[in-house]
Image (cartoon, rainbow, N blue to C red):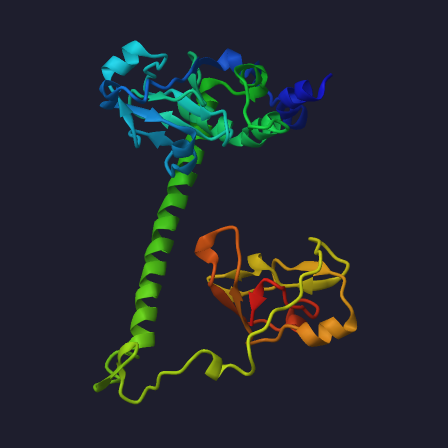
Length: 332
C-alpha cells in the first residue's frame, strides 16, 4: 500500500467502524463540483447578486454558514464561465493554499477554482458532513504536503474512507456539535466584552485615576492628569536597565532548565505553564534567572498584534517549577 493510499485509509484504520455504522468513501457521500473564476476584466461579470467564495474568505469565517462574500458575480457570469451555482446546503472546501477549510452554503452561491463544492447525497446531513470535513482537515493537509504550492486533488477527496453513521445518529451528533459551537460563540462574545471593558478601565485608571478620588487636574505632556501625579519615563521606575536574556536551542520536554518563551505571556501575565527546556551553565542561570515581579515585553512574534505586549511573572519558580531563565526575545 503506497503512502498516499494509506493516508486515505488512515481515518478508518485509526478509529475503526462503530456498530451500526458503515465504511464509506467520500465520493459515496457527496457529488464533487469544481469552482471557477469569471473574466476579471469584464465589468458585466462582477458586482452582482451571487456570492463568490475564495479560500481566504473560507479560512477567516467564524460561522459554519456562508451567506455573502467580499465579491459577487452576476447571472451573466454564471452563464458565461465555468462557475456553477451551488444549492443551499452544499459545502465549499478550500483545496489550494489553505487546505481543508470548509463552509456550508446558506444561500445559493459559487466559488473560485481553488475550491471544490461537496453536494451531499441523499441521506447525508450537510451539518454532519461539515463537522466531519473539519475533523478531516489534518488528513487533507497531509495529502497536500510535499508540493510546491500546497493543494489536494478531487481524486484525493473522493478516495478518503470514513466510518459513517445512519441518518438519525448524524442528526444527534450534529445537534451536539452545533450546541457546542453556539456555547463557544457566546463565551467568546462575553470575553470580547470583558476585554473591551478592561481596556476602558485601564484608560481611565492610568490617566484619570480612581473615579471620585481626584477633583483637581493639571496639564501634562500626556494630557490632563491628577494634580498630585507626576510624569515619569519607564526607565526611571525600573531597577536597572532593560536587558535581553539568552536564546539557546530549546526543546518541549525535560531534561534541562526551564526557559520562558513567547507562549508564556498572555493577557498581562507571564506563567510557567508553557516553558520549554534548555541546556545552560551555572553562570547563565545566575545571570538570567527569572524572578517574581519581573515584567517581560515581547519584541517579536509571528502575530504582530502581540508585539510590545507583556506579562508579569507572578509565580515563583520554586512554587511550581525549577529555576527559570529568561528568553532572548523578551526585555525585562
